[in-house]
Image 1: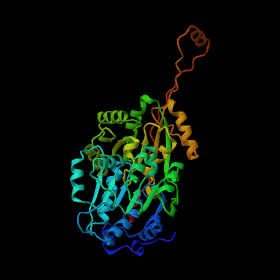
Image 2: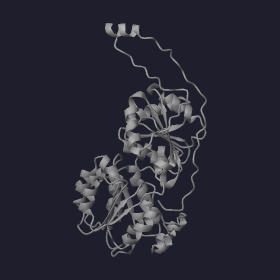
Image 3: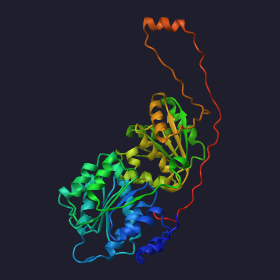
Image 4: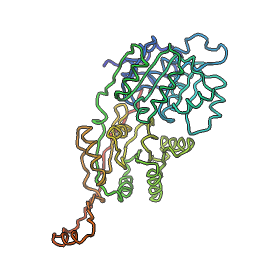
Length: 427
């Protein structure tokens, strides 16, 4: 596809200046295709992965429309643009993008989400805002309390819609839609298009422009993937063994549970590793503190659950480690994609114990390849089947020859990491 510059897309000067100030000059493929029709008011159905520039794709046209619209400063500001996102982290990042791209415009953006007190949010709502970015649950709460009026919304965006589906949010989304005016511009973005998302799109989009962006190379091709077979009891020991390698520059470790994430952190800290965790039981302040420490390289290890990690925008992540295998193969793809954003490479490492082998088979079937096994490490999987101590089993055991136990140890071979280049494209 021909390279398109942002200044070729008829973006107004105040927004163009903001983009240039941040070093953004080139449009990503989805921006080049979607921004022109969005500027004319068309609805959009966008199928694109995280890291392809989706946020700027909808933020720039919305900011331009609101800035050029009538009644900008007449009376109290009304909510004229609504963006729904599945997680607090993603909602916060979207709001920050609106603020950055609209820094030269007289527009106010607010982000609201649960897990924090609502008083600061309602005070800002009472002063009037133009753009609201929200998670569905907190938005419904404030609508029901009478703090939010959506009757003036002109632009409506659903971002990461498939994640909302996975998290059981579509019922709330459908309720929110009933509060919106009939005449509005709609934009729906999703990395995948399951049947439920297609049905939702059919109900809210009017003759939409349909854009599907397929990366030149799939993240599954770009990311180096490996599996280590290891006993459950030795996973933390293997993790600390790998982390001693300096090439593990910035590492996102996935735990299946919140309790498991805390346990990993505790063990890593005992071993002298500075690591932080984010999950649903952490306060918003703690989550933000942990993320900032990781992004600023104050710590190189972040442990997260799947839901907490959705929407994280972390550039140049060298490694993703699956401490536990996910139960859904698609979750594996979402996880490892954290280190292959927008075409950047990286490495994904999976720990697999004996009980997780069926999950690994499902993942390999889904991605159409067998993960290469790293056999040379000090904690190999030992399959020991303990039979019940009955007379029958004892007699059977005594008649079988005993195999000698073996142990494998080897030096760890250095693992390569792809270098990533700074981007000149807005997110």
